[in-house]
Image (tube, rainbow, N blue to C red):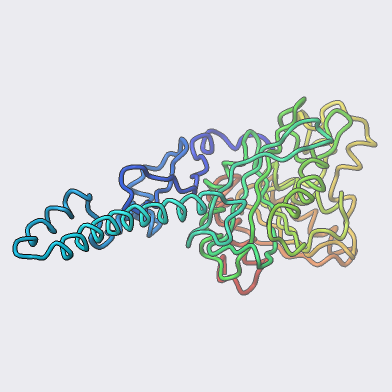
Length: 367
């Protein structure tokens, strides 16, 4: 399950927030911020139209001194009453320019608050935040990705994306979570929780006596997301490698909750030899490993499941075929896709798109 490698140590979430500019009261700024990403802002501008800083000139938005000079040049031969009217006009003009700046500031400030905004920008919006976990006695990191055009009065399905090990939620941005969100014709909320355990980092998103990470990334996360965002109560789950195990495991922890699952390059048993030496289950008794093994908990009523694996990933292929056979034997709907590649990013990137297409056939993604 380990060994995703340093490929994913660089990508970081690109904050979609909009920062208020103080340079001019007559400027409406829209600027995407970059938090330690490997991307240069100019490349992001090319990838996401509308991310440039826009200057929207306000007609006659000049200083009051400029306006006074304009008025003064025309005072010759004008009656006193006309001059007074002119000065009054200057005052009104200056106030109008100031008001325009205030309006722009109000607009950008409201847009920067993703939790209170009514509508999100035309591209997916990242929210890198935390949620409380009673099971782990701490606040846990999660990246929430709101779909383009997100509106709080609407309701959206949720897709949970589980990272590999070693790794963190930012891996899912690097693997295309934002890309599929922008491309999907079916809008959905994407969430990528932190699956690293406080005792053993490589948790496989599973519950063990020493750390109930499955509870933290399953029911606790779902409850928090459903209470903070415009969800419709429909959840899907996908993940790769260690997260692939989690994508098969979480539906067994909460039967009937996930509408569909899509593990990528995952293993499906916590027993040896596939997990021999895996820190997540090392030294655990059979009662724990049996409870955590998805292959032992397939059900006819289980969620439809797409299994994606690299065609040259020998251990992954063996696990995938065993899992598909177990689901087929009990009548659990399933499908298997073999992608060119091994246990690597090529398969995971393709797999994420295929999973979203499996969840939402009308999305136009991965099809």
